[in-house]
Length: 114
Image 1 (tube, rainbow, N blue to C red):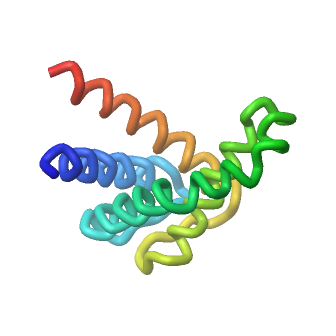
Image 2: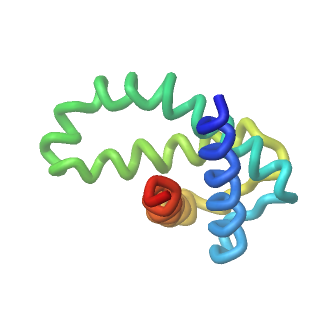
């Protein structure tokens, strides 16, 4: 439970950094960033495996690049579900998802190095 909370807070910090850096993504505060991180985590656990399974042929043909589209769809779904979090377009959601993945990877590497 403790590691889940740490990962949630780090992911919220990553969301906050992404919305600060990108002009096409906006969050109304750190509390909303925590909600965005939590909703995104739930969607990654429940909906993402279903989407990945349904899109195996196109993912195979595109050498895995379609997974970026799936991540973008999940970000747009979070935009629709969470008031106070907005992403202006599909392309900003794509850049947001890529940047969020990079920052979360860096944070994950830093937290495991202890």
